[in-house]
Length: 298
Image (cartoon, rainbow, N blue to C red; front, side, top):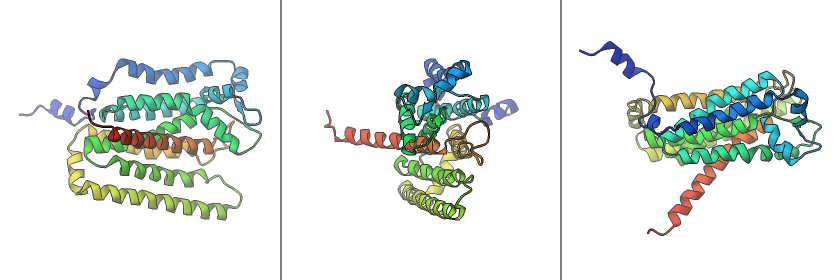
């Protein structure tokens, strides 16, 4: 006879095999350090926090970096901390499950150190009297990385791939969702904006379809692979939940009223962070793979 308790346990959500053993306490401390820093900075006096904002008309390299870790309102802070606690640990689990823990932390360090000034200075492309602060651009870089991590998890653990085709498919799908969301608040020349956005969405969907068809051709029988994937308990659930988080987060990153509240949501920075986070990951992985392939065997 089977024990009902054990049956319930076996059907419960669980991590992929080997992930718990490969997870390190220092990794968890590193992941938790970021929201702790964000909260600690928020405890500084408001006048000091406002002085750390990146002024587009008077930029400085110090403010370009520090401003990413500064929030003025509690809602802004909670949104970014909550998003971080959903996206980044998920990306970490996917990377560990795929055997790429080191790659995750290379991206982790790059996003936290290099991306704040890069995103700040890219905002100078549009000259305006305003200032920028907040972690959301960096957070969207992790969302871009999440697209690649999901694709890699699908290939390594669920035999659905290859990553080189699935990752761009997910990226363009996310972009197709983000594009119309980012223009919902436009009130001038709406017909022109709608036409341009429709063309952009169509182009991104076609791009996603091309990569998806390429993945289907290389994967062989998709129905058979999906059947095998559903049998891999833990890995299948992690993949489905991660994919749902990736798509759902686009609606958080691109709200219908970006001007609601005390500040304005910088949708441009969100798009930049998402695109750069994915492209830096994808290009660097492919580059290092080609360099390794070109090295003579020992």
